Amino acid sequence: MAPLIFKKIRYEELNGKQQEAYNFQKVSAVLADFGYITIPLSNDWSGADFIAQMHDGITFIKVQLKSRLTFDTKYCGKRLYICFRDGDHGPWYMYEHDELLEKINTRGKITETETWKAQKPYHYPSLSKDIKELLEPYRIPDAVTIHQ
Image 1 (cartoon, helix red, strand yellow):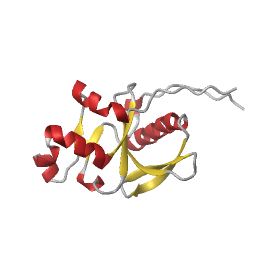
Image 2 (cartoon, helix red, strand yellow; image 1 turned 180 degrees about the vertical axis):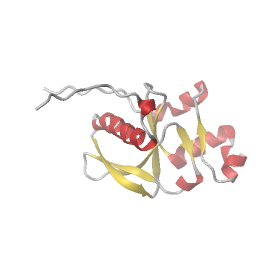
Image 3 (tube, one colour; image 1 turned 90 degrees about the horizontal axis):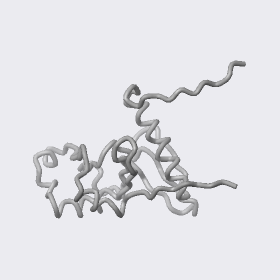
Image 4 (cartoon, helix red, strand yellow; image 1 turned 135 degrees about the horizontal axis):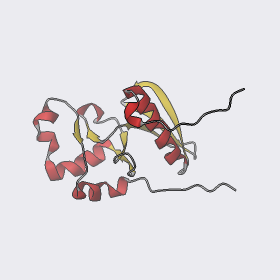
């Protein structure tokens, strides 16, 4: 039997579905350090790509995985969390959609933009210093698990 060959992939060379699967695996590893088990969903259920179950067996959250900070009318009122990574190697963030929308809307009134009124997603291609400060409570801390 031939040995396994491990060759790093280039994220940019993956198609959209492959990128989503890759990001799901990456964030699942991060969330595992905080006691979450992730369960992928085959189709968006109430806007969620996956369920994160806390180790207490009681807490379940619906999570939509995004490539950037995003708000969308279709996520409103669903108790949905949005998870994204700031760039290729930056921190992960996870926020409850409506909660952060309310906070961010006091600054920029995105719900009054033409994009929002047309019911299109409103996203931030990059994060300003002010937005990063607002997002700080939603940043998933760096964690390293040491197994003995």
